[in-house]
Length: 114
Length: 114
Image (cartoon, rainbow over the protein chains, first blue to last red):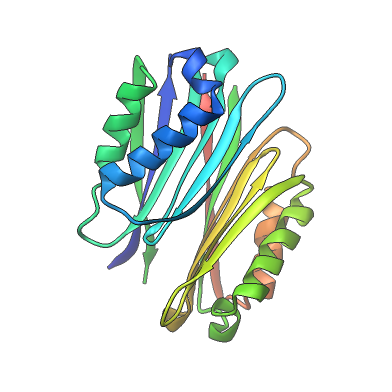
């Protein structure tokens, strides 16, 4: 039995402007949480100079995080969920489309196999 | 070249009281960030009923997160860092000791291999 399901997503060849806009990235991560069917408890986002955004959404079923490198067209996203009813793959598909990634992949890692 | 180093740590057989105390967990994750030599930008922690704590520390080099299941003596910790000078393994060792885990392990995943 695994307590959690952790999706590590790699989004390459993304739209650089989207990756560098903190408001858009925050909005997308919150919408990605909604796509997965999870309940949002809080969030924290930061923009870096000269470029890049980091952010985390805490959900009742764990967290989503994003770190962007706009200058490289790359974003690293984690979707860590618990429970049977949530659909983190939907978050992945949503973000792939919204970040306009031409090269997106993910791996799934089981957490808490007790 | 990898942009980030992502440590996924599994802490089993931990001290249940430590895992259920939000103030202690927040303090430990902030100190773990300091052990790694990273700069903290912000943090967000939540306590669940009847038990469990989730929290994230946003750092200039990415993030640390923790989710605890005190009733099972288990905590899932992620340490996502960038840069050559940071030492996320030190965070792992610090948390292993402070959570009093008798069964701790981690795997390291390269993120952003462009």
